[in-house]
Amino acid sequence: MTSVLIVDDEPAIVRLVRDYLERAGFEVTTASNGEEALQVFARSRPDLVILDLTLPRMDGLDVARAMRRAGDVPIIMLTARTEEADRVAGLELGADDYVTKPFSAREIVARVRAVLRRAQAAAMQDDIVRVGDSVVLDAPRMQVQVEGRDVLLTATEFQLLLHMARQPGRVFTRAQLLDAVHGVAVESYERAIDAHVKNIRRKIEPDPRSPRHLQTVFGVGYRLVDGDA
Image (cartoon, rainbow, N blue to C red; front, side):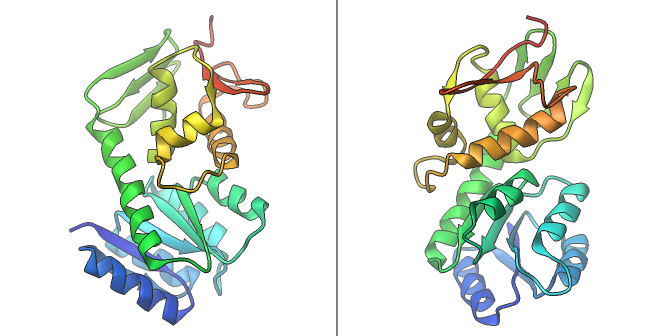
């Protein structure tokens, strides 16, 4: 059974989300603060985490950072913060999606399913994709090598890079990339693509400030090219 960890300090929200997820067939564990979240995470190794950014004892962004150091589990941010900078900060830490309070519990279930589908779709690809001699993506294993070194990406980052790698040199708009990794059911938030691109660059580029592989096409979007081209 697919397992989900809910981290939120509001009992009513935890009960609501837990009830809907359990009815949808998920196994659910919960935590009410950052320290407890990391303990439960280490013990249960959930398939996905729903994480509130505003937590007692340990900020949600710090919790996400610690979880990211431990692996690439999908993370959905759950937050009352409406500032764009907060959402971008979470996405740049490797969160896969976000939901802003107040929210519909049905929306949470839909987001959970969408994020898990992306992770499963990336894992089910059956080929090796190359961009020149520099970038190699092993789709079944969700593994990336750039110039011979292994790179660890989240499921969303991998799916985004894989989508561009299948058509190297093509310029994609932010809307096209958002649709490729999220699908039409998710709110169109094009700055999310910028956050994911920044995160990918930090991992694959020798100098993220002067990218050789994942390039910006100003006024349009992004393209992936062989760094030696």
